Image (tube, rainbow, N blue to C red):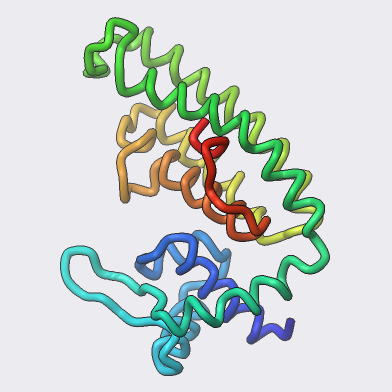
Length: 206
């Protein structure tokens, strides 16, 4: 891919992963600079591959034409990393199951009552369990990034969200649309599915 084609792919792919995303999220997902993201979004909109949405949930989303154009660009991107992606996806599934159980522990106490985060000791145990999961996913992503460099944004972002949780920001664990650990994890999961050419199945549900 040329540099310009690469940037176009990264932004369009990020839109396929997220569905709807404001520019700062696209910047985090792609690793591109803010002005590069803005330029690519404008070009995608001009070419009918994306549309801007305003209002409370503002951002950019792919059009049907954008979704149709994505597979060819994706195929070119993953051509040299199909085996690594398949291996990473298979390794991700059991870790994903662990992550789901940690999320459940964060949201519900063992008694089944909602976790109001008043018990600091309990929350600390769950956060340490999250850190263990983070170590496992970081390991498989480090290996994958050697073949598919764009996945290198995920361990950095996940580590940042984990540090926010450790600093006491409870929303950084699982609050939707807050660049939470859960948000980033869901992006990673969807990216692996798309990039490895897999369909979501019962195995993806942990």
